[in-house]
Length: 300
Length: 312
Image 1 (cartoon, rainbow over the protein chains, first blue to last red):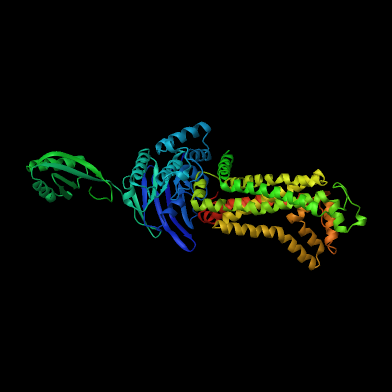
Image 2 (cartoon, one colour):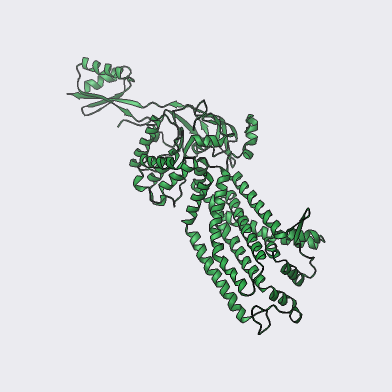
């Protein structure tokens, strides 16, 4: 399961043409180990093709693909051992149970009987499918199927995980559960490459965003979760709002009753200085704190 | 180990499908019905002279040549007819089991999933073939007992019966392999099924048509050799005296059929050579399937790898 040295994923000039259509055009992408990248684009932009190229399931017309240091064209078998792939279509057999699916995938990755059983149990728990482990997939909801697909991609503990539209068509509860698993994977230093139509869907879990349009990869942008600072003001909040709007480095000041929120200060120290500055301007605060605002999202 | 795991789960899926149970049930009913019709038919019409017991081998002198031949080989003829029936079933049912396998998996994303799960494409192809062969084998086994009817009316040599079964089984494997490769190439299940039947039709009728064409063109020796590769002829050729007799009775101007190939000093029966050819052909088709379903098969990527100077 050990990867060779170098970036986790490295694409150079990758072009994919199929049936007279260009799905990807000279795509360059480098993703360092332990980072999370979201490939964002509309339908037909080439997101799935990009993931399939990395997953060694699509032959590029030109360019080179290295995954975990291995050349994907020359050693697809090695690359497949390093990746866990969750396709857009979950690719599940309707007449197998979640436990059987996980056991099958674990066996394919060469896990012994005891390891298979342990990995299956832990994956069923991770994706909260223990209660449904004996049911045929045909009877599972879409969210449960997506979670099973994710568990199948993780059962052999791969260092690189590719997820194609992981939360598409999943309800809010299912989405929250899936995203919590992704956050956990990120904390485990796994390399995640996620394709999504909506940046907001995956904003909480990605480091960089790679916008993809008509097969062209646009410059990568760094994804930093915005920090929203909130204050609860005793008395009239208007002076606090006016003062904050005049202070350099403070942005998007809003008021809701006695609460005032703003963005801008990037460090805890700077935020404390703002609070002290308000107190110095005769603003009485009864509460002060921060919350993380989903990137690409709006004020709550 | 990984291959066995793949085969296991493919079989589980096949056995849990309705098609297998339906096919086995229909096959059992059809075979029982066929034997019933055969026994009933013997009561209405018999090639044997009236009053003879059923084990009697008639004298050729007093009966027409074909009737005499059929009467003398009644057990062998019945066995041949029943094997042809089973072969017909295999050609109809085999592609139905195999043709949808890869098309369905590709459409549902399961093929991607299985390949991405570190599965080798050749292992996937073999597992798919076995998964379609097992239910096909069960269907044939359900119809197999009907061949005992041949021993009810005189039987045939055990060696000939074994050879006939070998031809049937290997031809069934070839039929399933044809269904598999068509499933890998086609984009729809119907397309795969139609293509399978087209190719199998070519396999069964092609050598006969080519043989007739060659014979009409004057190449009789080549015609006999080409015809010998036909599965129907292979099935017939296991009973050499029946083959020769039928050829003389039905095809007056046709040269003697080929019964052996000479390999050095060894005489290889035509049916044995055909079994070998069908087995090799089936293996080649499984390999071809693996090439088709593996996106990064070395054959497909060699040009790109050469351009990059990457050696495998």
